[in-house]
Length: 92
Image 1 (cartoon, one colour):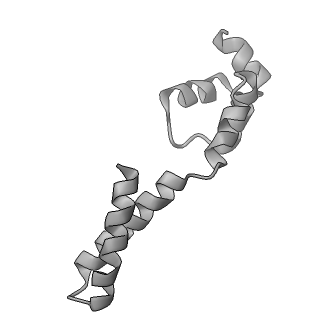
Image 2 (cartoon, one colour; image 1 turned 120 degrees about the horizontal axis):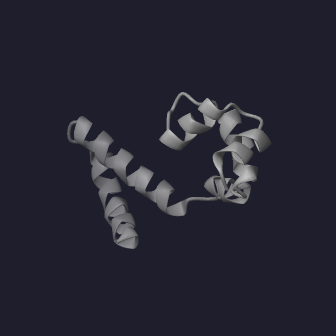
């Protein structure tokens, strides 16, 4: 598909489409949402909102490590480390 039908169908300027192609972070989300259906990518965007179990586990591990390293010795943190190790094993 050429550039002209994409920006015309998406109702955006040619320069906006060029900025999207370059990955310019200042382009509005609305412009992206207008382009997605033209390229038949609207369903792929919905996949971004699916449950990310791996990401949640990784987030927990990283936050526990960060918090534990920032604090002095704390028996509660020592009790959490076996859980962190167990989660790490599941992610590997």
